[in-house]
Image 1 (tube, rainbow, N blue to C red):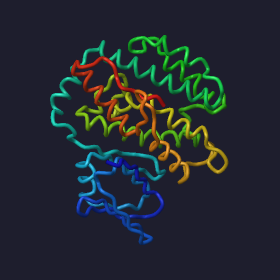
Image 2: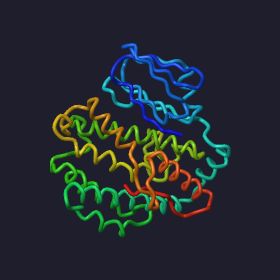
Image 3: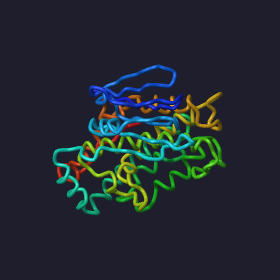
Image 4: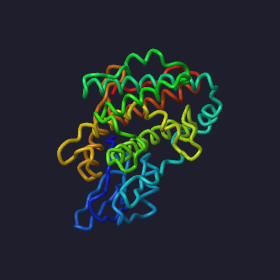
Length: 296
């Protein structure tokens, strides 16, 4: 299977399905087809995109995700498969009944992997990891001492070499780029969770009552630096202060299509997400006590 991320942002288009193929007819007359089974995520960015019900059903049946964007071209909604595994009901039950000590231990592993990835990125870009690597061994069960938050306060200003940078500043174009990349990453991880028979809303740690993809947000944490690195490296026409444009989206999607190291082997993001989700399902079933996490 070839996992692909498609973002339709350039011009109006009509989407349809024919013989298990997604057909994209652009206003310019260009027509593109690809097997639904090869599609990981379809991002509908242009405001004048029309599609049939068969498109949504076909993407979901093939295990893909559909993201609809708002007028600002930012992801506003996501469609995921309803059924992804032959023993999904059993896995839902085990997931819901997972004891707090297990969930806290798994979250500890995720935070450590995230800090490791952040430290590596800072070392690569700025020559100094700001002490994040030293924090890793001090992360406790459930991250009870909140080292993830402490690391974040060091990480962001150092990443952009900007002491005034604020992650929550909606006016900062760098945040628009980060949010776009994270939304696509979230879709990839949520898709993998569904395929593993897990429910993306039943979290290990995230607890925002309005977040329907809390478990996806948990598992994507160690992969966020992939997006962070792309945004931090943008220069010239793709300067971090520039708006979210076509080139910025292309750079972000290209990064997510790259390869990463897991257990000493080079793998795609889609393979990593699938392996991490499967290891989580095994942990809920009592078959293992650790997660397969990426080395970004």
